Length: 266
Ligand code: FES
Image 1 (spheres, rainbow, N blue to C red):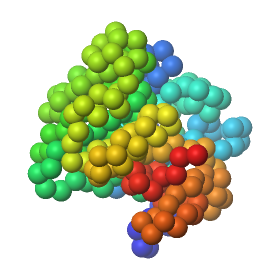
Image 2: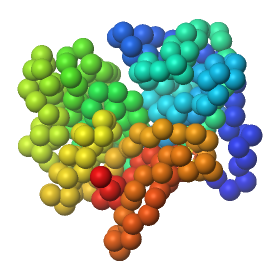
Image 3: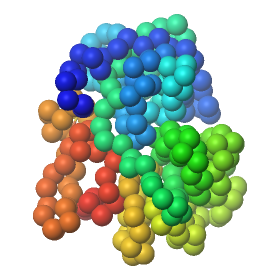
């Protein structure tokens, strides 16, 4: 949080502009939220109050998926996997949604002319799409390795190509692109820096690849959260610094994006 900002300033009742079911169980919600759109950085998240009632009490952390700063709009792409997200999926255009954020530490934007790759697994494309939007603003073309269980879960490949990036799909069942693991596909097409988000197993393997080939990398972690602002410690994950000191870092505050070499996979 920037100096002088208070939590109150980050809480907004945002108007829902659109609620779309991209495929069954995966939704994109677009909000009119001018301050959030202005301040959001790729990799940050909104802490969303899914219902107006006290049940469920806790907010849900959802990555910022896309931003239109001119229109003052922010989109979230989410999977319906529990009571909170099911309630969120029931919210309709014209409703108000209470959001807290943008929160957390996002991706470091690359500088210079080195090759940039993005590796996304399934719903992991959610924060990376915003990152790719920002890369195209600064005229960096990335190689995007888009992995999914099956073809219909290769989300937003057309939109990513329209932003000027190269899309390399991979599916576990071979229904589109490379038949196999998206990290394997990336390992055959290495770059100077890589940014990843996806299931834990995929991220672990991506971090191993980054270490093996000594390239720069950042990964966005997903963790259950309580407060979302660094106070409750419910989102701690084990990390190690450059001197080899282990500690517990708060995914909501020191993350959700971490340098790949800092994450300890146990
Ligand atoms: Fe409370 Fe991270 S969710 S410290």
